[in-house]
Amino acid sequence: MNINRKIVPAGLKNNPNKTMKIISYITIHTTGNTNPNATAKMHADYQFGGSGEREASWHYTVDKDEIWQSFEDISICWHAGDPTGNFSSIGIEICDNDKSKFVQACDNAAWLAAQLLKKHNLPFENVKQHNYWSGKDCPKEIRAGNWGVTWSEFLSRVGKYMDEINNKPSDWCREEWELGVKLGIVANDNPRGSLTKEQVVAMIIKAKKANL
Ligand SMILES: [Zn+2]
Image 1: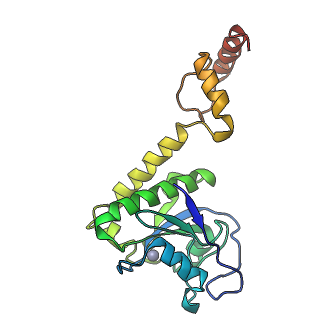
Image 2 (image 1 turned 135 degrees about the vertical axis):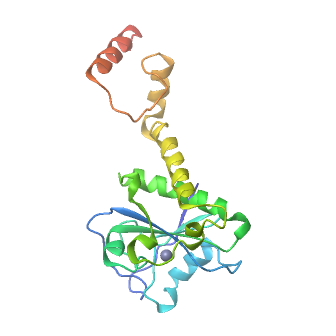
Image 3 (image 1 turned 90 degrees about the vertical axis):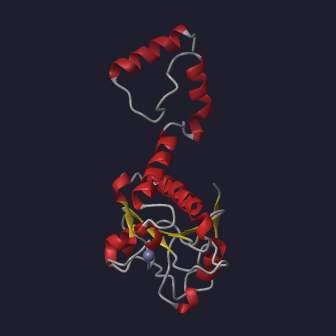
């Protein structure tokens, strides 16, 4: 998916203008706005305009079609209702403006969570509900499991996208990986996995035999 960006400028009331010491968690929310017009883009515009001067902000909003980023990952936002949650987690708001497409919105958010776990090298367990930080009943529909996605189903979608990422070579190495597979130097499996010494030796010998 494409990540659209509309980064909130400094100086607005909803922008803490501080950066995290370290990014440790991803916090999942639902917006609680069931108005059909309350899309990811609408929330991006809302934050870009200062969130109505409320001290409320989060990094990404996701709906059934789109992802919009409002703050850099490293920026502190006010979304968790708890200092640790705010100072160390990336907030993702899932739109609940379209019940019939809520499962798709959650799937898109799971894709985004997987990209962020990979990008920041975070463990899978560090995807948390807003509820984990402050006890708020959020993400409400996922916690209740009454809009087609339970929390464990959400996490398994994140896991599925993690597997997809881990089973694809990085962009910078795609050509070399494909050539290595074609020449039989490496099996087409787990391209980002690590190697034992014997595997390294076997690959060098195979590459020599392939006249590389
Ligand atoms: Zn929340």
